[in-house]
Structure formats: structure tokens, C-alpha cells
Length: 141
Image 1: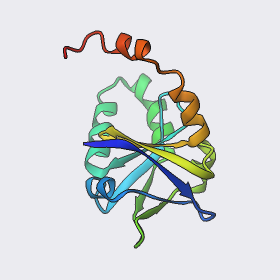
Image 2: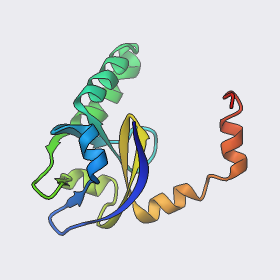
Image 3: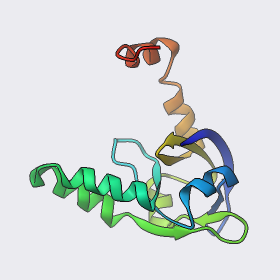
Image 4: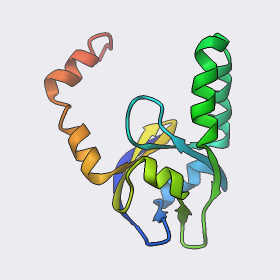
């Protein structure tokens, strides 16, 4: 399970450090892509979770899934860690997510999200105890 929030800088070459406990769960090679839920961030998936996502998308009717596949697959890249635990975020993805300077990495259970820090703070500001309680109404604690 991937969880936690981490603040890290993106260097001039477009590399960002991924904490070791997250690296262990992602594996040596993994996928980075554009998020598809109207959020200007990136998704990072282990190969196993990526294959599961692709399988779920393939179960949708072609009329719904073809545009999603084009958007997701055209902007997907296979990446690996360097010796310092960094990944190189391709320029097209950095541009899409407005990433430069610092970024916020969020563990989302099966994947990571990488956000422009200012955009993350704006998004985070939309959540309150009341909005989260409304989202959690169907859960039993």
C-alpha cells in the first residue's frame, strides 16, 4: 500500500527523488502518465498495477475506452530509478502537470500522484472535515 505525502524538488533536468519506502513498492521499472480525472497531476504505477488498470479500461465499451486509452497511453512512459533514487519525469509530463521547482508526492494506495505544490495546496483546500464526511457516508467505521 502506497501512502503518505512528501515534498521534493525537481532539478533542472526534470528529476525528482522518490522516498525509499515508495521505491520498494514500485519495483525497478514502472509507469508514469497523465492523470485522467480532471486533475493536473501525474500518476505513477508499478507494472502490476498498471496492467490491472489497463485491464479495467479494456472492460469498458470501446466508445468510452478508446479516447481514454489514447490520452493515457500516448502520455505514458516506462521509467526507472537512478542510483540516487530519482526518476526523470519526461518534459511533456512536466509541462502537463506544471511541474518545476518543488512538487508534492502523494501515496494513493495503488499508485502515486505527483502534483505541482501550489496546485496541490489549492486542491487540498477543497477538502474539509464536512466534505470528507460526505464522501465517507457509505463506509462503516
